[in-house]
Length: 401
Image 1 (cartoon, rainbow, N blue to C red):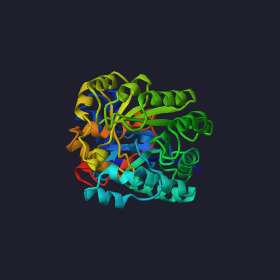
Image 2: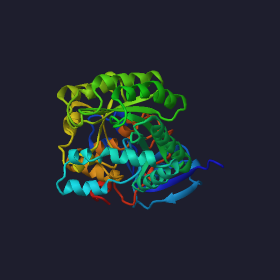
Image 3: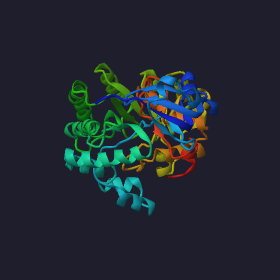
Image 4: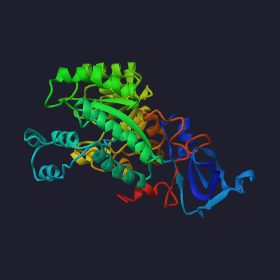
């Protein structure tokens, strides 16, 4: 199929994010979004070729197939949801209703609910069933402007089911080539109820991780380091093994209590440290000095009625911040990334450039894709989004739109 060049002209604004890239996504002011008024973009099916003012469109591009946006629509980089648990089976709606009526998470867990509900349903589901539900979810994210989405395993908690979930992500890539899927192995999401802790860790280290790496079933390995889950020593052992096998790493860090796992993420050169509700001052300082992205998940704090991560402290210290949905069945059942942007404005006190960076350039960095995604510049992937609004800010001003 021919790779045909075309142009979009007379965009109200083209938000290139060039200024954000120049500042490495840190200490941003609104002007860093680098919005070109009455902008134009020349592209083919793979790459952006030229960007600038419509009046400056080179003569050699003026005869291309052209779409006139009539200064009514803005163009932004395709959104990137850099932390989701897209693949699982079952529903916990009934448990959510019980929690809202006063039942505690611990009471539900003691009855065999909570994460065990999702683990059982996911183990029982076929690859076909998991694929069908994940495909529907991915299409929802796509309609919200998401063009790149990270997908974690973690609801199998055994070798076979974790591999099954990662295989589903491979199928999604073939079914939806218009989206980019980044796969993360999160076998260390919780402690399985039907295996000894030490046995399961050994299984991950010596069986599952080597297979994931050799079959290229995931780009990343993630570990939930927190009270009641994996401790720092266990997490470091798993992550160092993953790195030796060629996987990039992430950490669910400092969510329920401070374990200094954000510092560990920086020490191990993880691409991101995620959650960070309980991060310490030392963790904030470590992030500011590192390339590890602080991925904040305001939907989870909202869903659990927890205090938000100290976004302003991280940003003001010079940290690089991304924002994601944390889509999952237990604590953030939403794929609405623009709603997370709304929460970032209202409750994380982020300015417009910080919000744009958090779901484009910085989110790309959290996935190791900063050289080709998250900006509208020549050579970057042409997975940008045309908004039905004339300004980017409309996207998060319209709550839950």
